[in-house]
Length: 162
Image 1: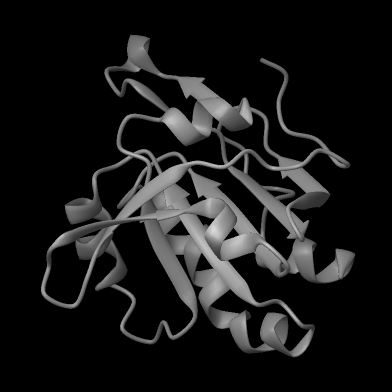
Image 2: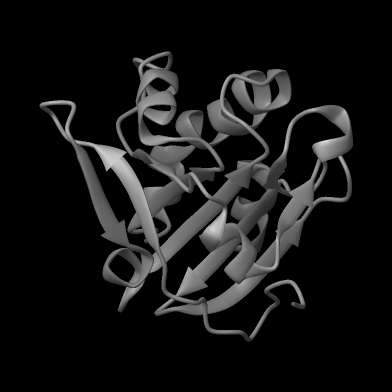
């Protein structure tokens, strides 16, 4: 499948999270994005260095600025289970706006055409690093990284596009 691109409508998909009682719940991407301006950013894995030290902190630190530019939702997706995503989210106590959602079987990542097969490195199928700006389900910006790079999918790059 071709990767998601500017002008495409994002596919619907079900992602998981833990509620306040640590019980697994699911949510559809369309329920979060219909009629809204959202940022969906994907990372190769929770607790990995670039994701934990650069990618996620950038969106957390710039969340108020993004909200000030009429962004309704900021969603972080990773091919991990909701328990891992919940534990990872807790390492960012300053976070008030970024939702951490799990794509445990990479189904949504595959629907976006953004899977990254790292099986030969013992990591399985992951997500490419990306950031999408989506308005009412339509992709306005699609910043997808090559390999392990972190050059175009940052919060700063999305802010430039707003």
